[in-house]
Structures are given as C-alpha cells and as structure tokens.
Image (cartoon, rainbow, N blue to C red; front, side):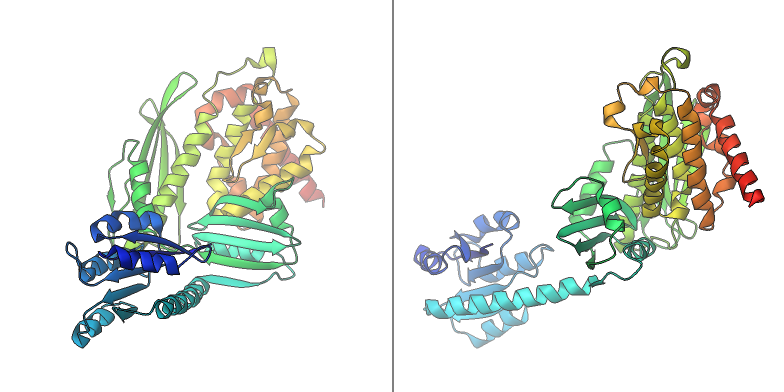
Length: 462
C-alpha cells in the first residue's frame, strides 16, 4: 500500500514540487493550500505523515499542528514543518511540542524524501512494538487451542485469538471474554470454530483491541434507538451504561425484556422478562470485577447489549404462529427456544466458547443416530435455532423430536455439571415458564425427567 502524505503549504509551487518527488506506487500525496481545507479531510485520508508550512495567511502551521495532535486518531502521525524562517527558539519550541522534523526553505528535495522514508521506517518499527505489547504469540501445545480459549475468556479479552495451521487462518473474536464471531481464510466447508478447536499444530496470536472512544459513542447511539431503562450509579466509579428495554409480540401476547447493569460489588447484568406486568423470568450474569473505571465503559455496555440481544432474539423465534401438534407435528421452534433458555442460565458458568463447543459436539454426535436433531443448529452466541432450510416446515417434526431434544439437553447439562456448576438442579419449569403450557402439551418435561432418570440408573449400575 502506498504511504499517504498530506502537504499543506500556501505556495502551490512547493506543493507541486513535493508531489512530483513523491510518486506512486510508493507514495500517495494529498496537497492543500489552506489548512482549513485540510482539517476536515484528514480522518478520511488517514495520513502516514503530514508536511506543513509554518507561516500561512489563514490558519498558521503551529495552530494546525496543535489541532491535529489533539485528535486521538491523528496524534501519532509524524509531522514535518517547512519554513523560510530560521529562528532557533521557534524550531526548538515546535520540536518540543511533538513535531518530528523541521526543514528550512529552500530545501533539497532529495533530503526531504530521505527524511520522509527514514521517519516512516521508524514509525513502522514503533507501531510494531506497540502491537506486540498488546499481543501474545507462540506455538500450539499438545492440548491444542482450548487452553488459549479459556485464557481469553478468563482474561475478559476484547480482541482476537488467531491460529495459522496447514494453510488456513482461523480466528475467534471476543468482546469482554465472550465469543462474538468466528471466521477462516480461505473459506472451506464445515464450521470454523470446530476446525479451529481441532487444531493441534500451528502458531497462534492473541491480540487485544485498544479502547476506542468513537466505538463507544457509536454503541451509545445505537442503544439509544430503543427506550432506555434508568441509568444505575456504580458503587465506586462512573455511571454504569443505561439499560435496554424492548417490547415484543409473542404469539398474541406482549412481553417486555429489560436489561440493566449494576455493581454489587462486581459487575452484574440482569435481564427481566415480564408478561402482563408479572415477572416471568430473571437472568443474571456476574463478572469477577467491578467494571467501574471509565476505561471499562465499553466492556460494560457490550455485556449489557449482548445479553439483552440474545434474550430478545430467543423470543423472536417464537413470534410465528404455532402449528397444531395433532395436525402437523411438533413445533421445533418451541424446542429451540426451550434449549436456548436453558443455555442462557448456565452459559456464564461454562463460558461462552465452551457452551457453543459442548452444544455442537453433542449435537453432532447424537444427530447421527437421531436425524430429527438435524433441523437445529447452534449459533456462535450459543443460541439454538431452527436451520434456515427447515424453517418453513418447522411445525411438522415427528413427536420423537421431543425425546431427542431431551437427550441433547440432558447430555449438555451433564457436562455443565461436571465443570462445577449446578446445572442438574436447574428449575426447568421456572426457566421455561413463558411457554410452560405449550411444552407441557408436547410432554417435554416428562421426556427430560425420563432421560435424567435413565442417566441416574445407568450411573448407579456402573
């Protein structure tokens, strides 16, 4: 990529001379005769270096320089001054303020080009050191990728875990320790997360994303599109970001989903689902730390948004009409909702990635013997959904799907229990209270109880 150079000088001849000397493909030059024209375009240009005259008739060079250095996006861009004046005091003052170099007019073009190249090389080296400071790299060990995933979750990473192996680059993106996206290059069949977790050789990089004030402002603007719940004052710091409030029509009834954050003293996100003014469900997730520093605001906002969006998305899968079980079979969207509701209760103890991995592995294993499970898929956020290809016929699954889903659910809770949770004691009817009568009608609770009883019997026999 060419290095982008911005030149600001009220003498068009100087601009033209520099532009002639800095030719593509090595350089891309943007010239301005007035600093007022340059300022609003700098962010779009994203320059690698700025060259500016000191004395100009409207905005002078030092004023332009100070404005640039106040910008978070531009403060690290190297800055050269040009001037016909040779006052040592003025030169020293500008260099002490952060200017990178100073050339007196008239100057030798070859010298200017050499200084630009040297400064850009130094800037790249410093940038590389900064990037390495925010990353960890190494070779995969005998246990593969899973220990790295657990480290990212426990460290509340906002960034990316990337693995290169056998010609593929695969990655997981985290926000506050939760999985938000996976991908791979080049594209291939199969799920990138499953392929990533199967790797035992290759190299990895864990990169931490820097805090971005603009991204935080954008998140606040986005969340303000829905009604905001009252803001909650943190116990030892700034105000916790405002909550989320959504209203949904679910099968002829209006429900409200409200999510808020609080420190008690650790940061806790609470989602309350209400119908007809009565609370039907309460979901809480607590982190190990009070996110009460200004620097934590982006993570706190993200935790609130993600939990709210997951719960809302889970209910949206129920907004379509219910097929009559006696006429068309079992409504699998109802079973997908029940699974997602249970997953939401245990995902915080199990971890976001382990939740997805466990659900998918059990699903892959059991769907070989139970084909009805093939109508489901596990999303990257851990929700269970009806596969798009089966969405139109989702109301016509055979009754055996209830027992198959019960087996999948029981196996998942068994794994969750094995990592030290209390999944087996989960109050299933309370968690699925919103759709209790519909689930009762298809014998869902009886099926889960029968599977649990069978697991206990086999465990006692062994």
